[in-house]
Length: 283
Picture: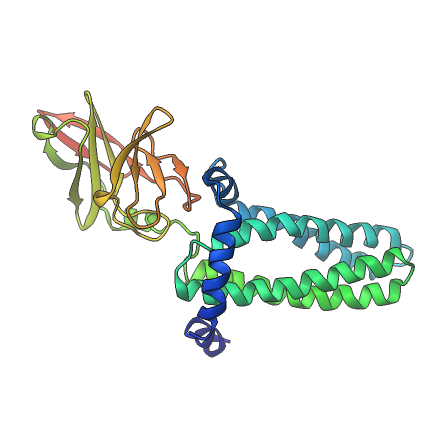
């Protein structure tokens, strides 16, 4: 399996289809607010993995219920529920996929293909059951579960091996030592400008607004973009830093994500001023 997944990651022949699909997805889901909703910006957590719980739960339950006598109606309801709920989950997944790097998109394309096969089989199962052909419906369901399970395996590879839509910056905290760390003299910090400093080997950004100073991890949680090279913009009345790589935006007074493709907030660090020196520590 490792060798197969490596070949998929390196399969540049998939890029022709993937690049075309990326343009289709981005042009179809054009309004920023739609993309942000599907990324899970409003939730502070990627939306796609939360949404897939409904179809996966319904389909797994149907597989169990199909083994019990006299449960045709329940099995049909579960298969239909899973099939219907998989559609919006797939839309959210395509939205996330379009913002990934090329090697991630290759695996994501195969992940989507397996899920499309599974969804098609489950749709056929639902139709067969509603027409009284429960034996065929069960067969199609178990075939659909096999395809969907393969898709889920690839989705796990995307998240845990390739880091797709996983917070890329929070692991930086593990490289910081305990205790308070001096950063700069407060009097030397300009108002409303981004500065980059180091805590141990971890890069952070500083932003002073009045007497308050925000200290935030510098690497974007989406794809590790350098927020220290980003722009400060006013969004909905809040000063936000915008990642120069993919445009994710985070409030500088709390780290909340306001625009995707990141679905995760950015980590801010506690601060204090001692003898005129700004200090920070692990949260």
